[in-house]
Image (cartoon, rainbow, N blue to C red; front, side, top):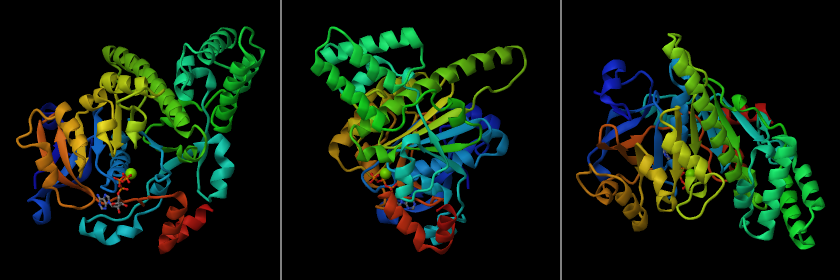
Length: 441
Ligand SMILES: Nc1ncnc2c1ncn2[C@@H]1O[C@H](COP(=O)(O)OP(=O)(O)OP(=O)(O)O)[C@@H](O)[C@H]1O
Ligand SMILES: [Mg+2]
């Protein structure tokens, strides 16, 4: 059965074939609705950078598909895998379960000739949340921190929702400028609070309000100098899960997530651009080597990071990433339930799009307007013809200008959903899951 390889251009197909440097995503769906059945294997190119969009309504299989992509990144042949690194930004606390085999869908896996298999990921949690994770009995491997000195006044004002020209914004700007000129990038949130307290020429109320915001930021438990080294988060051939799920329960939770993603995206892009220059010089000198792996960042609930309306601290870094990423070699996989709420520049840059079932007309209209010049039928017709099964999707490939209905393959590793506690109960339901779980707690 000929393989369909999404995202691979004809030159690469000729040179490398359909399998090398690609991952098994699922199978082509032939027929419509209930009549649909799986046929040829569908693979996704991983050797080149891509911007992949994963859309679909609630429960249609988006988070599951993101994990399938992550599994495939880590399933690459050793030499190729060594040039890749995957970071999953886990907003829901559902990806740590990748460390467990998918014993829940053994029969389904069997039908696909696959077997449950745990994924070797490193689960990072914010340094200040160790106790909370322990209380919730969620296993983790390592902690991470971010250096507050790397954030700008504009990052903070977006995170705190402060206008730059209001008194708090002006004080914030001055604080950042003075602290940076005095201490470079190495200052703590306590230094910022101290600066605000001592500042002259501002009303007490302004100072107290801004100070409070920085106390809130301290409670997030993630800002501390010098911050986790980026190289640790982008190790060759490894995948990591950055668990930011518990921020959801605390004040300003979304702000800290967007600050974190913005900062990471900025750093990874800058570092990759530097690495790319070094690689090019080496290539010219005849010494081919790769300085930093191609980073694949995997981001669920993407509309909250780079929304269509309004800006978050992650908006500009992510838009830059999708615009410039091809050259330095950074890939992004973005999922959202509401493409309609995702910034159009990001959608316009997507070269691979997987849409599970979508029913909201506003979402379909929005996608239709931005994409698909090569569709024979209307997007709604393609989506309507999908069987009503989780994991069914239409695949738009900008490289081949083709559209395929596909069924995403079952996961090898355990799919977590719902709250962390619910996951724990689910894990305990299966024998091997329970044994694995007990090893961790
Ligand atoms: N490819 C697939 N094969 C088999 N089962 C799947 C597949 N994709 C999804 N499922 C099933 O559907 C359920 C929902 O999938 P998932 O959690 O990915 O939904 P979602 O689109 O992320 O939903 P939400 O918008 O609520 O986050 C999963 O728990 C799993 O049981
Ligand atoms: Mg989901």
